[in-house]
Structure formats: structure tokens, C-alpha cells
Amino acid sequence: MPRAGAAKRLRRDGAAILGLLVLVAALGAALLAPVLSPGDPVKNDLLGRLSPPMWLDGGDRAHPLGTDTLGRDVLSRLLHGARVSLWIGLTAVMMAAILGVPIGLWTGYRGGWPDDLFMRLGEIQLAFPVLLLGIALLAVLGASLVNLILVLGVSGWITYARIVRGETLSLKERGFVEAARALGAPDRYLIFRHILPNVWASIVVVATFSIARVIIAEASLSFLGLGLPPPAPSWGAMLDEGRNYLTTGWWLALFPGLAILLVVLGINLVGDWLRDLLDPRLERGI
Amino acid sequence: MPRFLLRRLLHTLFVVWGVVTAVFFLVRLTGDPTALLVDPSATQAEIAHTRHLLGLDRPWHVQYVDFLFGMLRGDFGQSIQLRRPAMQLVLEHLWPATVELAVAATVLSTLLAIPLGIVAATHQNRAPDHLSRLASLLLQSMPSFWLGLVLILVFAVQLNGLLPAYGAGTWRHLILPAVTLAAAPLAQNVRLLRAGLLDVLPQDYIRTARAKGLPERLILYRHAIWNTAIPFLTVTGLSVGFMLSGAIVIETVFSWPGLGRLIVQAIPGRDFPVIQAGVFVFALIFVLVNLAVDLLYAVVDPRVRLS
Image 1 (cartoon, one colour):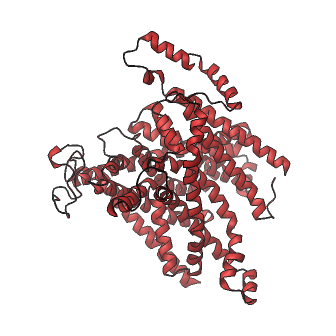
Image 2: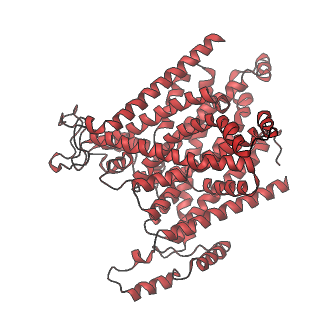
Image 3: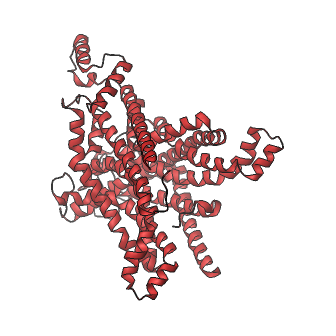
């Protein structure tokens, strides 16, 4: 079915390009936030409080998306918020992978008690609602950017460890690994030259989707008041502020959510495409 | 089969023990609740006295052993803030509020998924299928609590209180939180059911059913759908974890008096017994549902052997 295949490809690639465009725009917004912002994201203007978006009655062209309850420019806060969300998403996912991948390689290759230990630990962690773990850890450590990244990063290790372990278990029995072992290659060589390169694709796919999950988790924690301390602009914290003004300032709760939706959508589209491209075995048939 | 069950039950106990142990030490790292409890002008001696009354002046390992033995008797101690048995508080918030919300959301996300998934599969690559793909993508990409805020904005604010935004009590209060919680699992279920049906529909037994002249509706709802049940079950087991986590934020959005909100409010107050009892119940539900899912595999598909 070459035609159906082509149509499918176009749809997938088209969606992926759209997703990529969204992500590039978000990255651009994050990098250029100080240049693009019409105002200061943390400067109060108590006389200009709750000014609506500019296309509505009473809107001000200086504040395209309106102002919040302290008179801060919403668009500027959104642009600076992109920095927070993307930075936390990227660093936390990297940290989770750096912790989880070696654990997965080691436990999958060696087996034995470390395998039991880490897998049991992981099961305990998975039975713990993610958000509660985050809330409790942040209550211990205190809310700050570094702690937020630490909590979201460290709690993500199990995803990588499980996937890498599973693949390592099957790869180490495969012919090419056996052959290299028979030739006397040391374990370290087998793991890094033969096993890791074959797990790489799965790691990239999982990491992509994880960025989306971390961004939503960060927003949820900030929404519960455990994210960055004010006045730092974070999308979740903006939603938390906005929910008390649904009747007088609906735009405060609408725009940050749309920003999260767009970025997460972009990541999911790119992730779907990467999965089909790199790792057909992971296909969910969606 | 009995051996499998025994091993799984032991495993379940182990996981729950791990979770309560982690939470026991984690909450104690957050600090001392007596500081939040006593009058700001209290003397050191008064603070020490309160701490002694709460049993928090004992070494952690003593408190821990005490806690484990209490747990075996079903005694999770007294809430520090509310001076009532912690487990009783937790159960009052679990039933009916959180159970109502979780059951309503599960029913919504499962029952609605069946007709929607069938329509998407029978109209593959036509408008209804594209629409459903787009809708699922959007629903799975938005934070659930934001969807909740938007629903409040539309149904409670713009439509002048058509549905209540906050609180609990009547079935009308249940609608918005349940829809919010059901949205993402519904989106996932529809896609899963569609994929499953597309595998099943070209099979011979469906062709036979058609050749016998059975009505299409009967073929879809009676013959095809049961063979898509296995992936459905797996995801339902996982989505219980999502629902429990989701309930924590969504109960906060809608001021729903459930267990998630109880725990969230207990953490800043350092109400250790309530947090411990609440997390214990959450973890227990999670592992028991996943155990039930594993057992149901064998019921749904007799080819699955439990070992």
C-alpha cells in the first residue's frame, strides 16, 4: 500500500514539522525573552492592575495580553516563564537519564542483588503518587529552582532504569554481544560499545516525552504553591494566581495554560515522530 | 494459582511497607510540627512539653517501631492539628468524596470511550477519526488542572453559574471535577480502543459473523470489543495511579473535600499521622488495583497463565 503509506508519512511528518515549529518558537521566546518582552516581568504597576488584553475594551497596547493583579505585564511573564519551564524540563530530564541509564545498564547486565534492590526501590516509588513525592520533598528541601529540578530529576530515574534494563537483558544474550564476549572483550567494552548504542534510540524517545511530563509536573507543583518563590514568572504559579480572579481577570488563568498546552503538544508531536523513526518496536499504534 | 496469589500478595505488602517507611522519614525531615502548634510566645519548656505529649521527643527509630506496630493494629495515631484519629479522618475524606470522584471519572472515561473508539475505528482516516485524533492529542497535552479552570470559567462564570465551581454535596457539584479528571484517560482509551479494533476487525471470525448476516452493531459491541480488552485493562491499572495523583490537584482546584486535598493541606501543617495514613491508603489502593488487573488478565483471556 504505497499510497496509504505515503499519506501516513505525510501526516506524521507534517505533524512533526508543526510540532518542531512550535518548539523552535518556544525556544526562541525563551532565549529572546528580554528582547521580546514589552515590559518588565516582575515590575509592579498598582495603578494599571488587571488591564484586559489589548483587543478588549479598556485594553492597553503597551500590554498586549493584559496585566495581572499587581499590574505586571502578562506577555512578558509568559515569555520569561518559557525560560523557567523549558530549563526545568531539559535539566530535570537530563538528570533523570544520567541517573537512570547507568542503573539500567548495570542491573540489566549484572543481575543479582543490585538488580533486585533497584527494581524493588523503583516499585515502591511508583506506588507513591508522583505529586505527593514532589510535595513532600519540596517541603523538606524548600522551594527553589535548583530543588525543583533536583526533585523532578531524581524522581524520574526509574523510567530510564526500567527501559534500559529491559533492553540490556535481551541484548546481552544476542549473538553479536556473545561473539564479542567470546573474543575476550571486557564487560565495560561490551556495555559501552555494543549495548548502549542499541538502547540509545529508546532513551531519546522516552526523554522527549519526559520533557512534556516534567513541564506539566512543574506547573502542577507551582500551582500548589510549591514551585519557584514569587515574583519569579512560572506558568504554573501564574495559573495559581489567576484562579482567584476567574471572574475579573479570566486572561490570567487562560494564557499560561495555553502556553503549556502548546509546548507540550509540540513535544508530543515530535516525540511521536521520533518514536516511529528511531524505534518502531515502541509503536503504540496511535 | 494460589502460589502466584501468595507471592503477589507478599509483594504488595512489601511495596506498601516501603512507601510508608519512606513517608515516615520524609515527613520527619520537613521539621518539627510543635513549632507550628504552640503559641508564638510559648517558652522552651512549654514547647518541650508539647513535643513530649506528641511523642516526638523520642528517637526516630523508637517512633518508627511504634508506628509499625500501631499500623498492624490499624492505629495510625492522632491528627496533630485536628486531635482526631488520623485513619478515621482519612477514611472520611476517602469515602465518599474521593471515591465518588474517581468512580465517576473512571466510568466516564471508560463508557464514553467505547462508542467514540468504535466511531473512530469504523471511520478510519475520515473526518470523525481525524477529529478524535486531534481531540485526544489536545486533551493529553493540557495540564488537567488548567482544563478544570477553563471549565469553571465557561460553566460557572460565563454561563452564570450553570454548574457550581466549588464544593461538594449534590451531583451537580460532581460534574466539573469528574469531567476534568476523566478527560486525559478518556482520550487515551479512545485511541487504544481504535487501535485494538483495527487489529480485530479484519480477522476471520468477524468476517464469519458478517457472513452469517449479524447486524453490524452486534458484531462491534459483542464480538469485536471484548478482544480489545487486554491493553484496555493495562492502561486502566496505570490510570488509577494517574487518577490518584490527578485527584490531588483537581480536588484543590474544585475545593473538593477528598483525600488528596486533605494530604496537601496536612503537609504544610506537618500533620505526620494524617500524611502517613493518607499515603498508606493511596499506596494500598494503587497496588491492589494493579494486582486486580493482573488477575483479570486471566479472566479476560484464558490463554494467559498466571505464574
